[in-house]
Image (cartoon, rainbow, N blue to C red):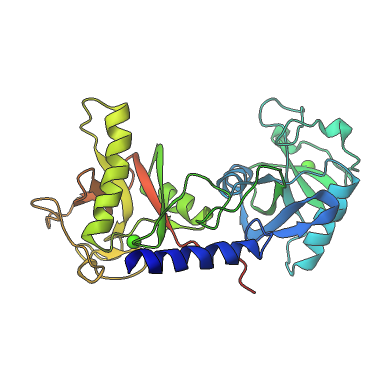
Length: 311
Ligand SMILES: [Ca+2]
Ligand SMILES: [Ca+2]
């Protein structure tokens, strides 16, 4: 019975993905560049913009040729924003004055024009390039601007059963969720941002079975890489950031209502310790209080439909 419903589920997923050629629903395909663009309207500094595109599986878009410029202009003109400029991927953050796109194309090879009075490298502190009204200007990389991400279509791109081109997500047929273990240790907030950019969320444990899956994934990593690991916790999606002691999932549920509330012995204790407001999982699958700024690996969970354009 289980196998049958699992098969039907898989078929529905495959059918759904066969119907779409989208990279992800929030990117727009432009045939002229054989790729996708996305404008992020929440302004960020250039480094954060670079990271956001990177986590989404793309790069900051650069005006490398006339087709890219045409597509970038078209996409920008679709948006309703009071900003007059957005970040491109062109930067000189490696050495002043030497501007390249993210993939190393020299600005000197791009068919672009500087805006009036640019470049001025104001205060000798402008190493990033914005696109403004069809021209470019150098700005301080810490200034906040919207930014545009670009994903080039490649022959090896394929949407998996997890609804993403990211092959590291694996579908579990019992939970109908996909999981990805990130071995890059980072703080809880950055882990949350990473999962969100990938179309997922920091894993929320809903059953003993799901705890066993996450434990197995984690043990695989730790046993392979650390023989004497004492740092054996993994960020997951629980916290008491809003009120000390009131533990919730990042989707707002009480821990007891998620279907799994197996805390590590003596956890969570009531002592108030600043910063100890984020939740983690031991490699054996027990919940534990953890420092939000502690660097640890993490697991993202993803609904297979989260990035699919269902219109
Ligand atoms: Ca300038
Ligand atoms: Ca779950």
